[in-house]
Length: 74
Image 1 (cartoon, rainbow, N blue to C red):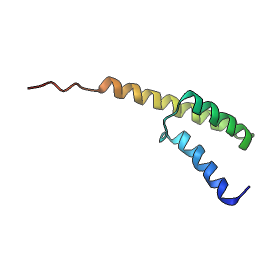
Image 2: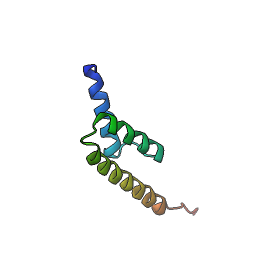
Image 3: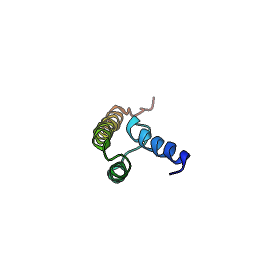
């Protein structure tokens, strides 16, 4: 495996769990499959963090949609 390839894989996984990427079911499924292949031993730990990031993102989206205020004309 090329040296720089390791860093791009790490960045990919980090963006998935830190909340900077919008997560859909297909992205979570794909990331889970890649995590099994890359980090078989640590994959369950990663899945837990990914799941909580996904739940947190869904809560934030729900909160934002509830808190939208409609501007009223004066």
